[in-house]
Image (cartoon, rainbow, N blue to C red; front, side, top):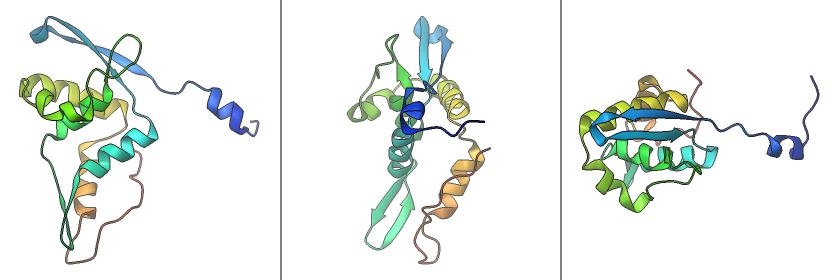
Length: 135
């Protein structure tokens, strides 16, 4: 195999998407794979700092992921981070279905989320910044 150069890497289109039927909403949506930066921002949003303590913040965990993954036919995001609460007011059943697809597309399993939780502060140790293992 050839050794890739920076330009070779940057030319590669490695972000995929999947269209999902949502009969409850009368159509389908497109869910995209996140960039590395988007995934880092999503994971950072799951932590809450209170004084010296870092806790897992699971508020709107589905909507937080979906605002980064739901896109239109031009792959432009449908929602901004400021609209997380608004999206979170939609049907839990639908959000869960879409969340599951977004997790799969982004190689994020329930086990990965549990590891994130374990990496939040435990007995004053701080949290780990090590990357999640691939599932």
